[in-house]
Length: 147
Image 1: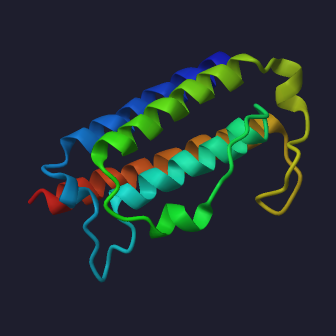
Image 2: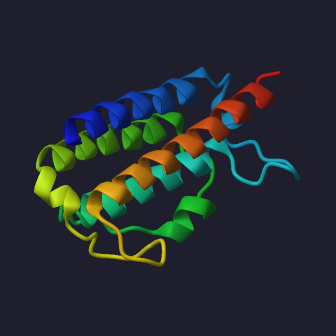
């Protein structure tokens, strides 16, 4: 299952990079309106922080220090910096997940971010769904601001 998760995370993190590259300008990445509260830049920072914390730090024992407030409050981060964050997150995911085996996927995740105990495998599937939910929002945002 880790091989499949690596392929899926890799594929969709690459889609995230493609979405960011498709914005007509760096400014468009940060557009918000009364109906759209989170820009693509904000969602990208959030995804990078989320995955680096829950996969990198917790499962991979990296030294990543999450600043969740900054994920939602930073603005006008250059596209190149966002893309580098996505790329380094993809590399981290590949490294951490390749170190897991079937038995480790059945172990209980050390935290309860959803409010209940779950296996590592269950939470990784949740994180993949979370990535895709925000990836869809970014795709929709890009198409709205590019009109």
